[in-house]
Image 1 (spheres, rainbow, N blue to C red):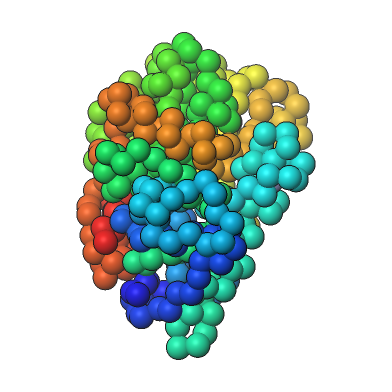
Image 2 (cartoon, rainbow, N blue to C red):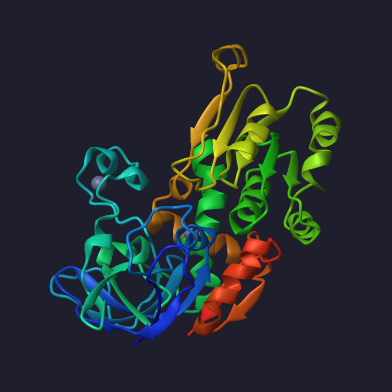
Length: 356
Ligand SMILES: [Zn+2]
Ligand SMILES: [Zn+2]
């Protein structure tokens, strides 16, 4: 089968023939229908996020189950599925207390050796390897969805949408009537805007330097959309001065984390949703941590339970309360994945979706 392989971080992906073997015990084979190109794929490609190579990237995918490994009982051949890049073990402390997104064993599917090219094993990117015609995943990573949902729409739920909407509904549990700030309007940020609308936020201020993304944010429920320079004025206008009840940082760099933090009111909550590098440093003085009584929270995968939240996101979509189509800038072929990275890097693209 064909797959886009990252042979070395910093280099372009190369579409090549890849061998796939399995499924083994507890695994299923999935024919990929669609895969979003997520910003963290770009961050792995350019080296911002460390990831072992050679690897087949892609972790926001949907498809159809074509084969069951021994012992698989919860899925059938022909099932339509969205893939989850966290595979909770079900028995650790995090899983038992209902926080399966924090499962320390949740990335173990990255160790699977079912992909190879010219005899060399390829790491499945974030465990899923959806930039490929087929993949093999643990049963728990394949969440069944209704068959009438278009698979290219459903794919987005596998990472960006669940992360952004989940950050608001699960991680922060935004209260109705809140003033919400979203810094960064890529696929995840625009999903956070929609999550804030679903949560009944009073004002939703979206910040992005790119005007087309601000326009999309307004269409998806932001009450105000401003460039970074205009944030102080928007803060004064919307909150009357004290700052936002919740600020979501959806970029993952120190400057924007500081921006979100400083725009949060005393006693409010700053949520870091962006996947940043391990090398950046964000500075806080001891005084400000104490004095402003703000909460600073991380957010992995929208604190989601995929088996619960993927169908929930798609039901919001079915009801017309979550716009997934507006997040897609382009439909592309697998061969166009490097140009999709370039477009994303330039800031003009929200989501490219590979259709197989
Ligand atoms: Zn992602
Ligand atoms: Zn676990």
